[in-house]
Length: 195
Image (cartoon, rainbow, N blue to C red; front, side, top):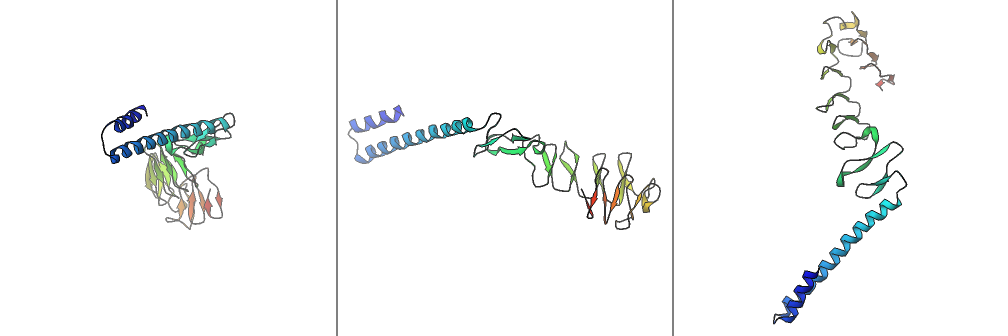
């Protein structure tokens, strides 16, 4: 700002036109106003930090107090958001709306994470098998997707779960028939939906 003052003083002392002098004055005033805004913005951020309860910090561009109670400030810089800690990915993305964390990204609601290192998600009613997703007409056998008739499981025989509403008439071994779909192990069928 002292440089601008020197510019104004030189302009007033020299034999320059009024236009040049007014331009220097306007430039100095604008510089002073902008410097004041930067200071007030930093002070506002410090003020928000002072008003957050213990264990919390301002998060995101609006400085929402975040932290504790299972919430974390997820992300960095302007892309920060207050997020439930299990929904914050390794890259700082907050998965929401029924999404699930899959490495550095999110799987859509109802999709299962199959390979977190590549953020590879299986569609609903598919099963993750050795890093690939098996369709309903396939089963996972020794880490590979194979037709249901291979090694049992086709048509409900040889260890498959009978399920007339799905292609092939059965679900892979260990799954549960749920109307027109197969639920993965650990899922429950509620109103013909796997949860």
